[in-house]
Image 1 (cartoon, rainbow, N blue to C red):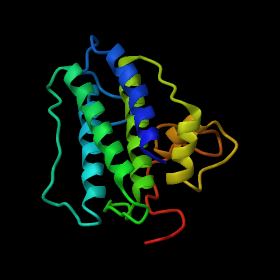
Image 2 (image 1 turned 45 degrees about the horizontal axis):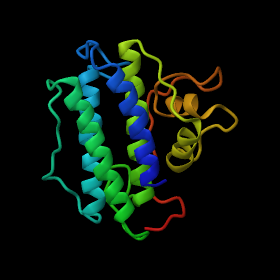
Image 3 (image 1 turned 90 degrees about the vertical axis):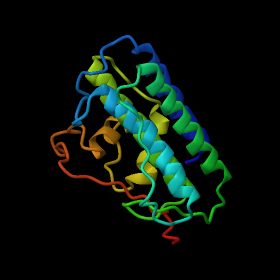
Image 4 (image 1 turned 180 degrees about the vertical axis):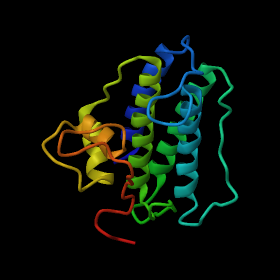
Length: 194
């Protein structure tokens, strides 16, 4: 995955969130223990954190704590998501193939950080949308690319977006694939390069 994928996911997130700016963002987001405002603030901060992790070249950034104020107006939180997306996209685009960054789920290359950013954008935008009572259906190809990069062992043959929601513990996929209580992505490069 690459910077264009991050920007595409950010555009979808921005469109939905801007449409919902006049709604009550103090309501609970779906499937997470956060309000809509908190989950949107989390996304912006996480994207900036991913960019810093990749730029740090594998060093653990224990001293860095990015945070957006969930009490800020919705428009400011959306601007934070856009800013975080742009910074992550720029770092991903500027990183050479051998670049690695630290993540708790394993060292990741630029493609891995792009995929993690897209996942954060899509899944948490959906969490916010469901909390607000709005539908969100991202691009199926983008969801497929995230699944392929971060969840290589997910069931094939199902629609990409529901499968990504299942892989992140948001829903049951079908009778054979109940809702996951624990999950994690695989951020290491798929070819096993350190």
